[in-house]
Image 1 (cartoon, one colour):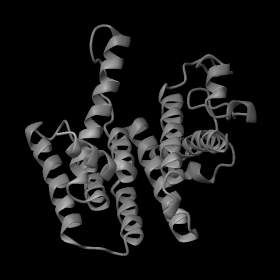
Image 2: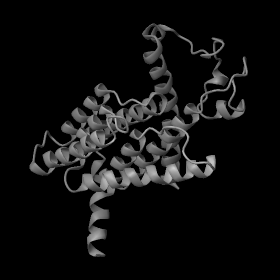
Image 3: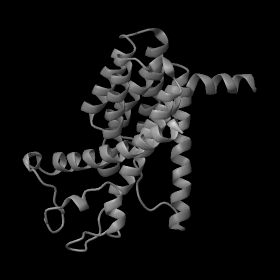
Image 4: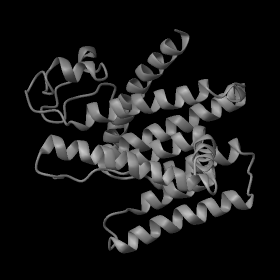
Length: 256
């Protein structure tokens, strides 16, 4: 019962963080002067939003995905980013729960900080299809601190493999299918997981992406019609491999 309450709390907190990061990313992308505004507003009619319009996920569902005042459709990115971040927090919370060695003050703080950065990366990629280098740099610094600035070969080779893989994809897709933000993400992903776990993390990312893509095609019935940000799948692949990568690899090797 305790784990259920813990995960439910994590999901709700993830929704709240996604809502905050969504608002923050909008203000950063449109006009930084909005950072000084005290109240959020509808991008279409500019009507100031009340507290009942700002409840993560619930507000979107309660108004049927339309602005309460001008009836214009609200971007589907809002509920998608909130649900994605909520699930990400559940993944991470369960990972922390299943690894008691992480339950000390320093590691908990660093892991939560890492999760906040991953949440922001996920939300901003869903909204704007970008993975800011600044956030990738922060994630790398946090991982360096968590690992006591370990520069052992398996971590450096993890970076080489991950970055090399995405640079190759970048060239193959003629600089369109993969952005440099994905390459930046590959740096901290490769360092955090190291070799060979980073390979598993990349595989899981593509599996998550493929499952989502198939679901989207079934929904659309006519195939893929829109671009899908890959950053969230990389984040989920990283988190899965971060907590359970070695266990999965040992299971795989033992069943060969």
